[in-house]
Amino acid sequence: MKQKTLSQYLVEQQRRDPAITTEIRSLIETVARACKAIAHCVSKGALGGVLGSLESENVQGEVQKKLDVISNDILLGANEWGGQLAAMASEEMDTIHRIPHSYPRGDYLLLFDPLDGSSNIDVNVSIGTIFSVLRAPLDAEGRDIEEADFLQPGKKQVAAGYAVYGPQSLLVLTLGSGVVGFTLDREQGSWVLTQADMRIPEDTAEFAINMSNMRHWEPPVKHYIDDCLAGENGPLHKNYNMRWVASMVADVHRIMTRGGIFMYPRDERPSGKKGKLRLMYEANPMSFLVEQAGGLAIDGDERILEVQPTGLHQRIGVILGSKNEVERVLRYHQED
Ligand code: AHG
Ligand code: MN
Ligand code: MN
Image 1 (cartoon, helix red, strand yellow):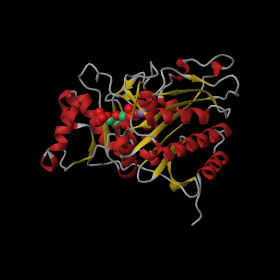
Image 2 (tube, rainbow, N blue to C red):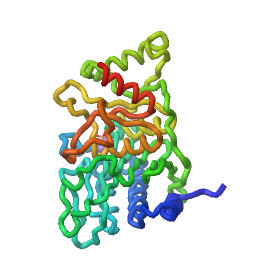
Image 3 (cartoon, rainbow, N blue to C red):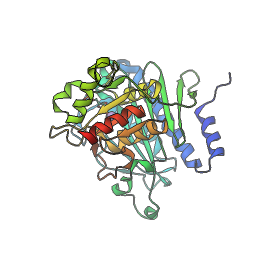
Image 4 (spheres, rainbow, N blue to C red):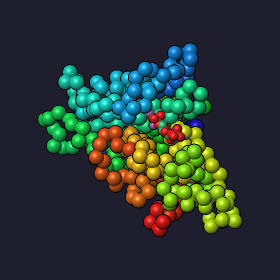
């Protein structure tokens, strides 16, 4: 069977859909190349000196791992000079990174969580990169890009994707018409199409949530998980299984592959009221991918993709995955 690379896939998509510009095509190629470089660093582990923490903290007060910073630098360096972008924003940077005047400026904005699942780096469990592409507002032409230009609802995303660095390195991508998956062929150095149309089963009996936070959950989440745990003799009439990798990319990838529901809900702690995950770097791109694969993503009350962001580093509750199960959790929120 003839293998199709990411480059071939993108050229075909561009021919098929005029909305996919040459800029988008080369932007995705560049992000994918950066993910390949990150995959390479990750796989070296202790031999490459990439494990462990730094002294520094990011803007959210989290201690930075060496790989958080290495991955951020790889993505910045790769995407700065090509002429596709006007600016970038990252979970690991306090504020936006405008393209320097020495390079041509493009029409797009790139946002990323350079290294997702930081707590899993040093224990050799799957980690990843998440990215989101927006178009710069038309009125930004001729002036400097501002943080406010990034604050667009997730439904405006032009593309989104993630890479998982696990037993295999994978790249999962949407350009707004379905979701496709690529596997890194390390000998060829290319991303090869291995999943032509990823669809999330609508029903599931597998949930992913950090159970150690149970005492802090809001009543509808507590009620739903209690009902799952009651099994086939309970109100949901089925036995549920549980998984929690603690790398969103790995948990979402499992759901993209075999279905499930992922929850990192907001909770009643002062620090949890707004949720843990970041709207712009995690919730929005993952919600776009999940919905493009036939799933659903909500914050408890509404679709995440409809939420109007108010801050670059804003957090949000996340409930996503198999459509019928997420709708069930939405009903628990409406009724409780
Ligand atoms: P990051 O490593 O980018 O900070 O993200 C970690 C996130 C997410 O990947 C995961 O689902 C969640 O944090 C895990 O949180 P707990 O350690 O609270 O389970
Ligand atoms: Mn993350
Ligand atoms: Mn991260």
